[in-house]
Length: 263
Image (cartoon, rainbow, N blue to C red; front, side):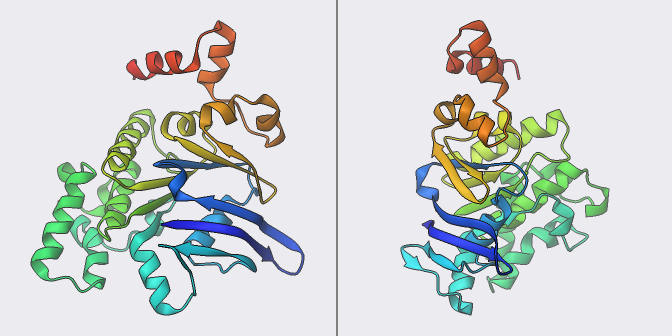
């Protein structure tokens, strides 16, 4: 569906944003991309979206090398889109319905199809309770749900999320986790860039660690994130569950189930 093959992107003549990065959404249903600031997460996202064109390597979409012509980019963004860290940067209308229906309108869908799809996306993100409210009266978490619904209305197969938990209180974070798990169970591919190691560990079934623009390692979260030397080299915190499991000498999966049952 979507992959990068040895892509490199340079900022200016010498500084590299990412270097020789291989990535595939087929590695998992919810994939985490983690790394300290400047590791290359945002650059990789922009390359996957076709916003930036790598100086070396290639992006493939549905098995074809992305050619960056208008038609190819339109096809890519019908399948792959992104929810920004700040939802207000991608919300343009005062009405929830108008905002979510904007994408389908641009696709030229018939009115009845547009209405049905918009209503379905409102239900999918549990926004029915505030769908009649003006956007400016919504909480940050509600606006994030509207932004996600707007991407879903495009019928995307792959959803990229940049620091999705930023600005959310604990309840909103739990609601977001439930929503992302539901979307994944319905077949959506979710890719998350985050500094929150606990969120990544709970949600993701595969992760990539970026360090200085390169993939330092990749694999199953429990295996990768329990490697102290790797996490230290990447300047990342070990998830709380893994720390506690070592302290208590308890299997991390058992401990994680107990913690999740208390949420």
